Image 1: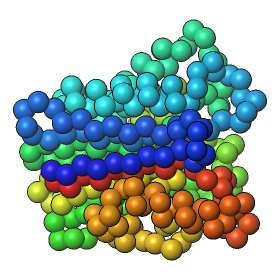
Image 2 (image 1 turned 180 degrees about the horizontal axis):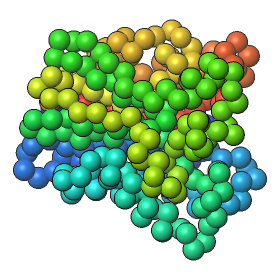
Image 3 (image 1 turned 180 degrees about the vertical axis):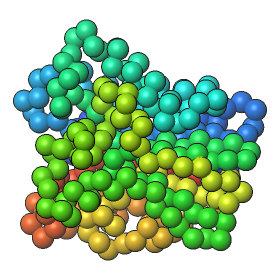
Amino acid sequence: MRIETATAPGTPGAPNEDFVAVALPAGGHGGALVLLDGVTPPPDNGNCVHSVPWFTARLGGALLELSVSRPDITLADCLSIAIAGTADAHRGTCELSHPLTPQATVVAVRWGADELEHLVLSDSVLLVEGADGSVTAVLDDRIDRLRAAGRRVAPLRNLPGGFFTAAADPAVAAKAVTGRVPVASVRSFAALSDGAARGVEVFGTDDWASTLALLHKAGPERLLTRVRDQESADPLGADVPRGKPFDDATAVLVAL
């Protein structure tokens, strides 16, 4: 098994709001991967005394531990329990009902001797390479569908008819895109925060197959460098409008 990862803040020296971790439990069969992309709040948010990196580390760590220690429950249930526990950790000091309480997108993968289970919530990406070399992108495309319909996205966060992130409501775990496949049918998989997926989703220079091929050939660090080069060529977002000229970026590749 080969595991490689890289992460970088959108602005050098600024906090990186992404979280990534992989666990290989004792026993020699399978593992678990968790990638979170923290949602940056406005500067005047003020509803929570904790930072987004605090939230992603707390939620990501809890989700990874549950993914490993509770193979008897689904990843969606693991996420629900992790969200509830993280909310309890700051319920006494923070206004968790605020729509901009700390939150994150989620990719989680758990695999064993027989099966690979996955979960995607919001706009991070999971790429799965089949045994035949085909590449499938597992996406939660609610944000894309809202934008295609001309809807303003921000007011529809965690609301019916909108899109969902992991914040303080454990019920959103049921909104995630989930699935299971035989592990024998998977050659490799990769998780990308949306900052690492910009070559496909923002700049349109790449596709998912070429992105995974680059990860295999040159590693996650090279993918992040490619994205940074594209962002730097248009530092103000004048040619390619985007919410952030530069974004936190994280990629992890697991070759089985």
